[in-house]
Length: 281
Image: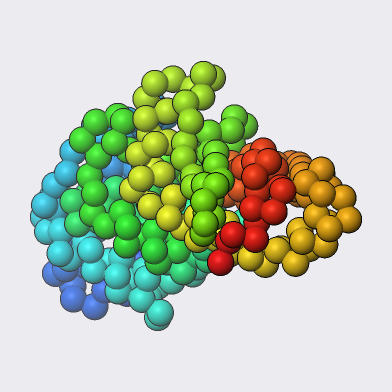
């Protein structure tokens, strides 16, 4: 998971921009009537976010005189819609992830926005910037409309959860034929019990083990030729030295990237360094 900068956008202003072109006068008046409630929902969201307790926010079927279906359309038609008045805000949020990489998986390309708390159950948050996360389509689909019911079953929030300084993502080489690299999370003493559980939950919900294993196995096949040449000249020591340099470079960039964990696992496996890399297909 990658930490990204929180959007500096006023919730009420974003909401009012999105409803600015509603032609139906009756519906527009209803939307205007709940502007204060949208602002209050933003305040509650920020308060719960400060404690990482989004699960305490109650779901609803609407806000005041507006039902959830009409509120959902504010997002789908008036923000995400190509010609919607809020489209510029949608694009700004979508483009906020560094290098266009999904902060939820740290691997695939951003293609949409994910509602941290689903719009179908939290209609007051449908266009709340702090609830909208740039994401790849796979991560958006994986989470679907999951509602957290306790602290430990909250996925990591890229705007609030800083888990980038301690290593919690690791991997190991499966020393068989064919070989593979398996990923897992490990307990971090510097984090409390809840955050450790949330890291595990995030890893499981977004099926990151499978994604990272596929990428890592593919990487091995891409560098097999170089590893073979190194092994011919200097044996497993030469291979290990090369892998260590690659691991250090990736660790400096991001300690919890799958690349860091994969290269770490490869260099720590004598079997892999002594020719086991040839068992990857």
